[in-house]
Length: 379
Ligand code: HEM
Image 1 (cartoon, rainbow, N blue to C red):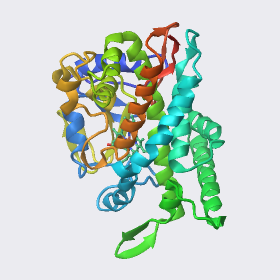
Image 2: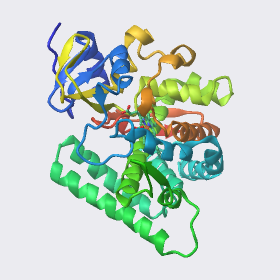
Image 3: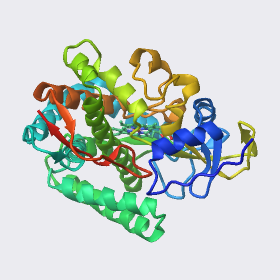
């Protein structure tokens, strides 16, 4: 087997680069990612074996992303109800209003960058509304996420620490507002402050650092992926007007279409694990303690499962689509993400029929998916 090496870089088109790499080897070695797992079957075997591949891959508290059983299950049980159908039904009208307001700002037949003007503001506004945070926080949150992403790319530990402290301060402000107010606020941040967990036989409220971590993971989980997903949906409609037409006419389920668009053009590139014992992946030895990274952006385009990576076949590919993961860490926010993307797509297609790319699109760099900027005219 060839000894392949891969590092994410700012120059490369990461999707094309992973497509090429996957033809050469199932697992690549990487300074940044450790063992980079590329094929659909290997990614599945890693994410479905949480005993060999631990999620406790980082050094800071990450609830529940960076936890293993039994602790993971305790916290997972707390957050799952926030994404259940009845809660989401109540949130749907707010979500639609935000989509209508943002899409309503688009001037027809005038070029604009849909990433900075539409996709990011939509994701940020929705997230603030979902958590019950003031709209005025959207700009701060947007700037925080950009700077945090840049620090991840640069592996800049000092800035990452500073950004973590800033996020913590921002959440503490939100917790304090709720603690000081006599009128109990009925929002998701307030609800989270009143959740209990039973750890080692002791029932207690969530600690502040756990609330901060949950909210950080929801925010990071939502904003980057939803913004990337929306950019990719715009791009796909420009390239595939007939699919847009089928969705508009109700001949194709919006949810199925969006899941398939995002299989082809992944909003989330990867997630980390750490080996708990000496093992191997497709014959590549992995030592206990070594980093392993599952590349959704490669596995979901693996030709041995999806025949042609770029062919849009929602029905055929649905069962194997790993967009929201598998196993115990499968995305709890998937129902919310699907609702947000469905509503956005419905509103977009109600207002516009023509999608034209006006400038060479720029793809985002690792660890983001989607586009850095995408100039389009809508009519
Ligand atoms: C298009 C949008 C989204 C995509 C593609 C996506 C994808 C994923 C994937 C693949 C995982 C599994 C990670 C792993 O196995 O390590 C995951 C986990 C997670 N996602 Fe999402 N996600 C999206 C939106 C959201 C939203 C809206 C939220 C919450 C507001 C969210 C919260 C989380 C959390 C908390 C986890 C960790 C779950 C655990 O460890 O048990 N995600 N997501």
